[in-house]
Length: 459
Image 1: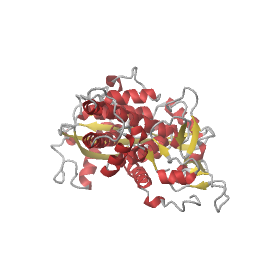
Image 2 (image 1 turned 180 degrees about the vertical axis):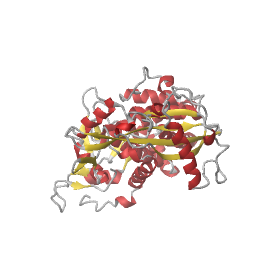
Image 3 (image 1 turned 60 degrees about the horizontal axis):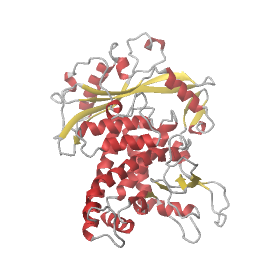
Image 4 (image 1 turned 90 degrees about the vertical axis):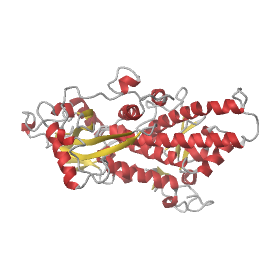
């Protein structure tokens, strides 16, 4: 708080409520997205929550109309639309800025409630210069997605601007006409809803563990191509360009092209599993609603038997219980953590049904100090309505390089705080959410002279 403004009640702040609720919903969908295996994991949680909060701004038509009129259609100047937690951010310091913003500022890069001077040649904020703090690192991903959104907004509204300016594209001084304002408001609200859907839909195409920004890029491209193969407005091109501009590339891909970034199908031939076809499925009035828990267990059992076959386990990122490696006792039994049917509606209103499942396997390993910890692997599996495996997005549980990366991360100076020891074991900190909370320095004029006070805002 600031003495001249009084208390800021974050429990009534739209942005903070949406941000924190997004954390909870994402954690419900993917529990291992809060398992800090490397720097991108926690940063992704922050970026995703920020994106949901910002795109929710566009659901308020009166706010959008006022900001479009005030900024004369230039969304980069529409602070109420692009800023996150304005009132809360301004109460933390004297700079008058929001907590975070999803565009690059001309002179400063505002991250996690603090100003950071942009270094020469480092504009826009990129993956290499963002640092390791989750909010700061996450802002790179959020800005990349929002940059693509702004590109599509300019692309889709260019014709209206030209029509209103008799082909010049240069708006005259003064207020925008009512007709042009109506067009811009309708277009940007429709586009924001599309991007919100794109961001959420991509979660189904992410690996179940060890989430990286490059994985999300590939998930965005694959998910969008799945429901909108034509892409007349080049949404995917804009996303790829925006991510590349921020230094986020598709890991394991030779080029930053749409075909290279799209997840591939199984490397080995896998026959469709009849038990996983929609013809065998029992549902409650809608294929996206399973009949009961018994039906979900039946589906999980069928998928588990398929994924743990000796000849197929590696394809799913697993070590088969029938293999010699499993006999060592280092690996736990694979677990189908979730299995659900989903209904996807494309831009042409076509409806596509799929089944999405996550399979996890635990590996018991030791850190550099000889303490035990759990290392996770597995895959997200997407199946078609006839039980055929369409995509396997895997993170191998026996991947030694990934294991060594996690060991290094756990012992780094910046990230060790996310882990805690329990005797001879190491596990993620129980109060991880609290440790992620934004911290700020109390104002010298405030009642308290404490140097570090936990802030109740976005984590």
